[in-house]
Amino acid sequence: MGDFFSFLGNNLADFWTYTGFANATVGHLVMLLVGLVFIYLAVAKEFEPMLLIPIGFGMLIGNIPFNMEAGLKVGIYEEGSVLNILYNGVTSGWYPPLIFLGIGAMTDFSALISNPKLMLVGAAAQFGIFGAYMIALALGFDPMQAGAIGIIGGADGPTAIFLSSKLAPNLMGAIAVSAYSYMALVPVIQPPIMRLLTNSKERLIRMKPPRAVSHTEKVMFPIIGLLLTTFLVPSGLPLLGMLFFGNLLKESGVTRRLANTASGPLIDTITILLGLTVGASTQASEFLTWDSILIFILGALSFIIATASGVLFVKLFNLFLGKDNKINPLIGNAGVSAVPDSARISQVIGLKYDPSNYLLMHAMGPNVAGVIGSAVAAGILLGFLS
Image (cartoon, rainbow, N blue to C red; front, side, top):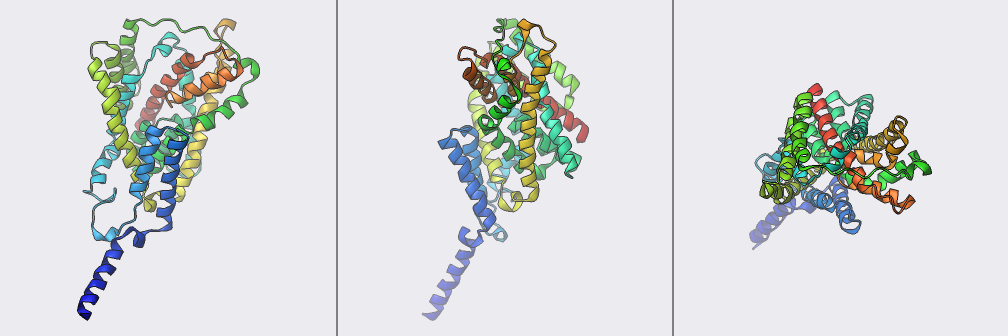
């Protein structure tokens, strides 16, 4: 009888060593709390729920404690585990181009085509990327890490994942979570900067209605856009190629089924896999480091610089434009590629000062230009640093 109880006791003791309770650390608890905060922001505040729920739940999955020495192959960093196999789509960089295919298939570039000078506003906002890159270098990050960190300023999660997977895979979790976090916080971060950098007269500027864009122009835009951008920055081909291909599927008018698939089931599936695995990659032992804290700080700075650069560029540009062609600086924030949230912020802030001044269609110009601009910036950094 004593042998039986001894055997049972040993088995229970062994079982205990496999449980999450026995293997939990303070780091695990911290990351589980962060995951719950992400889910709360998505559900209660409706901050980017399509992104924050998969990432937040992924954080819960990735931070369930287990015995690392048991060879269970359940962790995202254990080769051969299911999560590790799914995570290969992130580390190998093929989720982001598929996301860009869907973005292209759901994006209307008419506002940009009708007013091409808005491309410059989108380009100006990319200064946040290079500003953060220089600050990261000054803080001691090597050039490849600094480039991967700087791309957060583009406010484009897939681009941040794509570039960090090539330049700094060890920092990818922190960079991806930082990029998506600040994308979700667009309604919180951008309005104070927009108000600070504009005066009451500038906020009331009315822009000419966008002209009607022909079907031919819409079809030619992705073809010309692909040739111009990729001849200039060939290293941006995976993102830019898929973006413009998706847009051609949409605008051609003869491949609607393909466009609907790319902009619907495909992008939804990839978003789930990308969000869940990026969240799971925030395993406490890999994620809770001083570098991760610095990345979050630099991410905030890059986002602030990008927003300010877009607004200030419009103010400067207006000095060279005629009275009837002025651009409302409140659309300068939309140069970051958080589509369409930053454009909506332009609209919301503009309506507060003039309830009849609708800026959304104008703001979509620099907004979609920002998508192209961030991909071009990623290509430039990849070409110089890899």
